[in-house]
Image (cartoon, rainbow, N blue to C red; front, side):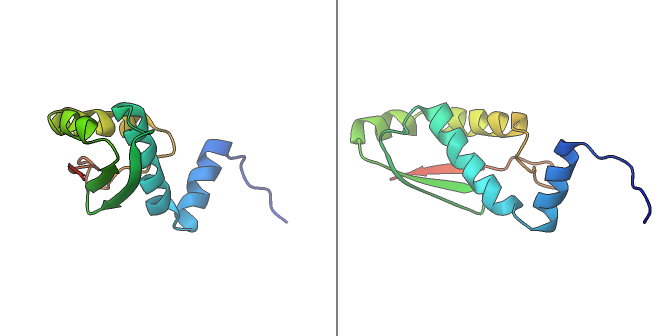
Length: 105
């Protein structure tokens, strides 16, 4: 039995996530968490869906939806900044923004 070099826990977790192909599901959950943190609308968010760089959010308050609609560009920027700081987030291979647009329903 040969000894292998010690690997840090951070590297071990990222290797496990890659080998089990869990990154897309984890990324989706991290996007939802970033939305809740950045928008402050987690109490009014009924459902969320993420596909092809577009975050779809259904809100229970029409006043909040209108308010957030005018802040969409800023929210996209803030979410992408939050995701870039997240240790568990796996960025896109080409380095572009992960969230491209938000659709509020």
